[in-house]
Amino acid sequence: MAIKNKNAYFKHVFEQLQKKGIIVRKHKHRLDDGEYNKRSFAEKLETHSGVIPAILSGERGVTEKIIRNLCKFFNVNESYIRMGEGSIFVEDIVEPISTYIRRNILYSAIHASAGDHISDYAPTAREDVQFGIPGLQGNLFAFHVKGNSMEPILHEGDMVFCRRIESTKEIRDGQIYAIYADGQVRIKYLDVGDRNTPELILLSENHVEHPPIYVDTSNQNVQIYHVVHYLTDMGSRLGFV
Image (tube, rainbow, N blue to C red; front, side, top):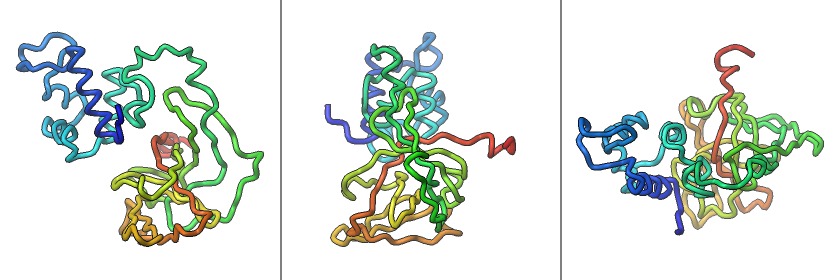
């Protein structure tokens, strides 16, 4: 099945939960243990009942909270709901655990700026590290976030995991990207503007403090990475480090 985005992955997960008898057409007072109707399913995902049909119809996107709760409460494989990779449910994965922790993520010591500027510091090859995280598959790149332009979505100290995209045609509204240009990496939303021109517009979540940045993609050194996952630096946020 050719599934192209998170909404489609979510729809497929929803359909499989129906086939498993986990999501059923019952009134709430008739639900057995382990059964959910659309309303209780939405409550379990910490959202409103109207959000589910909106996601299924493509009117709304799948949020990080919904992804986390799907994986936590319904045993959904995070690689599937994010990227369409692997089995839908964790219990259907039969490969040895060692295959999950293969070193498929390349971490670079260069910071990804969530601001308007970044230092000219460039890490040496010796500072690049390869590692793996269970559930994250495919060839990924990891950067630490520096700056506040993507708050409250991303904070300084968070780590983002990115997959390189080959064309601006793959860019989607509402998604976060890491853009490498002129020796710098920036974390932003992207607007391709007029697709007939090579200009790329970098937009911040904290747009009041951070104006748009314009990048010429005709420069062969420009690389674009889709942020598919991130880890929160809760220690720094709570003041422990």
